[in-house]
Image (cartoon, rainbow, N blue to C red; front, side, top):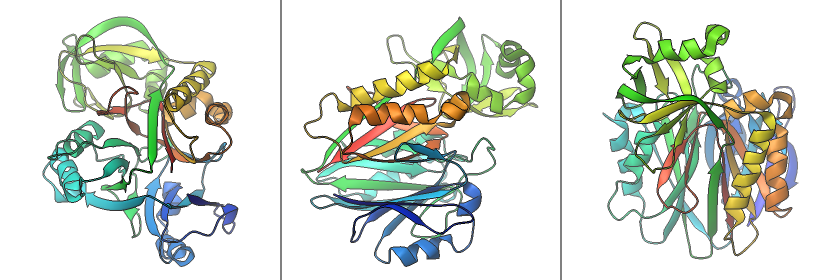
Length: 375
């Protein structure tokens, strides 16, 4: 595996930190939404990689090595030596529902030898839970899935993604990896602590939460936030919800993306089924950093080889809590996975990964999610 990395700020040219020669590379381009909106960005990077497969995604922060950047564009170009890949993209505007779109993506892949899919998805229009259900619903599909929903800082205005064209809204890109020489491992962990009483979701539709314990969800949430309610929806990133849809199942953390004052409802990054148990959560900087280390330990646990590439997707809510100490969670990961791994990734509006002992993908919020690859 040969890897090349670079970063660009609004007022500088590309600065390459690793410059292996790469041919026919997969190029992962993560950047600030405003910079990715520039009309010439695709042609600029196409000029660097004439034979590259260019995957773009907007972020709430760019991860390169152990550094977290803002208002930049980062790129990681990967040439696989014994692994092949295929890329499929769709736009949510072309489908009547998100599950239909997800299924159409995986139906296009050759299932024979398909080991893993890494997803870069729009984070504004796409219900991540529905997307995953659709992706895993295709006939004979058995591969694992990881990835994330694109971000837009803490602005929540719009997110962008694309494959081999200028970034745009509504896009979902799936990179499928083939070959027995590829070793892939993954894990996720949060570090958040539930507090307050457990309650029951009594009215919801998909990822729209209307009522908890028979009362308007937004009213109840504002009551707990107190003075911070005036800072919604951004304040919700500091106090996510834990949702357990079935007794004994692993609880999932859900971030509130937007609120609807008129309907007294909240739009979550993933589904919140009726009759699920729900509880508020909070965290500290140290807890989040330790959570990232635990995720890295889980991803490394059964590996046969040291990872060559680590794709990190962490949540914007973690970044807001950690603030100037954000890089600590990346440093914790780097210490666990070792010096041979090149690190790249982004801060997101939702993270996709199975739990460690499962092959079934889930949408997570407020977690550090790792995808470790080696040949």
